[in-house]
Image 1 (cartoon, each protein chain N blue to C red):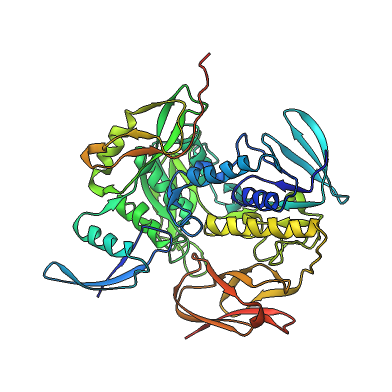
Image 2: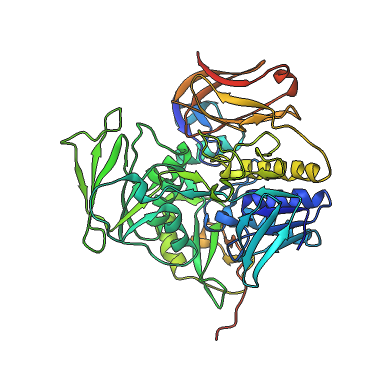
Length: 122
Length: 405
């Protein structure tokens, strides 16, 4: 049996599995169904949620924290970071606001994870 | 000013405690030294919070925002004082506070202390060499990067493979800082395995186990860090030195419960180094309750929230006239490094947190008449069990043991 650790949550289930002819034939150790989909993704196309931050214009803070609302392919992370560097949000920003839609054609949105109030620039 | 409950600190534990007390119709003042509530959650922009408590995965700021909304909902009962520092807590249940409005005294019936932890500083590591700029604790680097939009350097080495260290390794990498490695003194990673994978392996960041920093060099800015392998007593092995040319050193070498303000008022626990508490959150001083990382360092904010709520509930009962004793001591036994809480009052079931002393493949946990088996234990992952009251009856001390099987 091969071993893999699910990274979807801090439980960190240690999943044991066997693959025959490119198909998963047995799985144990995942405490929830998300472990199985994680395993499938990990074998085909590993995906991660990316938390980061973007600049804010006219905000009480220089940055607003953001995340991808679903995991994106791991191989796209460097490209994603290049793109996100160019992005600016205009205050006010509220938790859950969509900052960037359908990022890199993944169908995944980048959403704000905190509220940043507007301050009028002096 | 008068209140029923004074909560000191508006991080995860303090916010939960304030809300729990407000739900019992008490008047609450919560004092926070930062300009916003939420504590360290605000700068922890990574995901992984809330899975136990909310059954969904949130980032730190999102987790904080949910409790901030609740503080607002109970605005009639809870007065939030930000930019406010508690200067002194007195034996007569008064506190001296300072805020932008000036210095003032507050009279309370109970205190819930939730001041969190501080980071172990560079100075405490006794590393020989120069004292240049470019050396940060992980939390300071995190605040500079995530809140203040400041880049801390160009090329970095991380010391300590706790979760914060690994998460900062990823964060620095994503922001274009080259992370040359993570150095860990122990023969196994200090944080969760998921972080080894998603923070280090995903970005090909090497993890140097059984290694330590033996020298830092640099005239103004950090220039070079020397790392060596260590033996079982953590002594550097001569001849194993490696040089890393870096301008930034990030330390993630542990958290220390912040207890100074209460030093003369309550007893501390010598293992957790935090405020010794009963399972009610009560300290050795009956009107002072405590919760969160000032009592023991917790793995998950979800646990801290639960402990904050517990302290809030029992502090409310205390204000309403209920009295409980500290109870019988809870003592770490075989293979157990530390336990929390430190006393069992006999009121209610016991939610027990513990860390094992060494990695264990299979172990049987024994607490009074309670037994539970575990697999794949490591000191970096806290064990949490709920032990029914009846399993702890007629004991004069609760010994917590992990037997190897």
